[in-house]
Length: 193
Length: 390
Image (cartoon, rainbow over all chains, first blue to last red):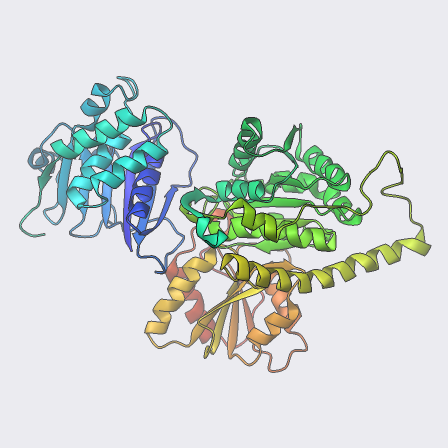
């Protein structure tokens, strides 16, 4: 069972991202679970959503995720606003929406060299594909493209199919954003990992 | 091709699993009032009825009391009827819950377990549904979204065979808002399992009769006797219908579920979705050589006394984990389990744990702690708090 925690701000689409990601893994024959942090969500406030992925028939749990294998960060300001790396297992991926290169980000935020880092400018990609507004771009589908590229699963094909099924509006634009993000993801794998 | 092979596998939240169950059951009348975390059930059903995907009448009302009143009436008029609520909404229905039983209206309701206020809390706890224990409703608790869909269909079948209202219960958020794989069965197969609902004394303007008549002491007690007999019959019907369901749909449910119990000296008893986490913890304990298993109570009313005795008799110790509390006494599943075991042969000591009230997370380590605590203890206690700050 792998556990993924998604950090975003209310309104960015973090919860929908968890559902799309789970569905894409489901399409690959995995057993999945996706759920929001059971809070009272407000626009702009830090929120979290969770995804579990495992083989069919394996035992799951029904709790929040405290020690994720990987994290996805929809808003770079969260890296310093909340402890997004809390409990993250060594060797895990940190996927961040930022225009910075992974090397710059690691230096600026102080990410330990025990983690793999992938960055993508999901905000610019979302705006290019007219997803959300300039004040509040919807970056959830683009960042999943980066996850697919960095982690190697789910496949881009299954991700795009899940996006087309799950997003309520502009399915093609969202799929295009995910594809563009997939192609422009920058990756840093430190030697320690 | 067998019909079941036409099933559609998809990913659904628990609340949508309810809605698809209601649709497959070809419900004819729905009335509900929105309340977190039930609201998306009402929304989905309103959507389905508006688009014609589900050919039912959705009656909008101003309160839960009116919602249950509406579906009691429609049920008595011969229409398959459904409502859904949670917490304060269920509490507001209380008067009419008794009424549904007394009028023998086989309404099905989904209650999403949510803690009662104050303090205001929208997270899971079982006290809301358990507090309706003595209203005469059948109560069925669930562990997964698939089970929620399946049980919604089963509930109509059972309710309509014994003419008793039936409550299908799922946990707030942990099921209601969690997405997981669900198999949606072909309509034809559900139609085969669940025939159209017919009420032998349905309201008929051409043949008027009284409903809810006055019964003096020389009649009232016989009505109550009949309701109790219907509950006893419901236990047999539950067994029959879950077996038929297994044959047709390939999923077997029972009054209680047994997990890793074959050679278990110790048993953890609980109901609802926490069982998933308990099974995970128990599998870890098994790897350490601990002889422990889980008994999950699915059917709460009628209470499956014989099955509980069969599973628990002869064990060394039993811990009941309650996500609910009857103030002044103990957890409610604990109370019921203890009462069922009174007079059983080889009765083990039974320890009562209360955990996870108001949605406080119950983690695998909490389950392991409870197991180890039970093993250490000698004298059973009614209420042992887990994870409370004092």
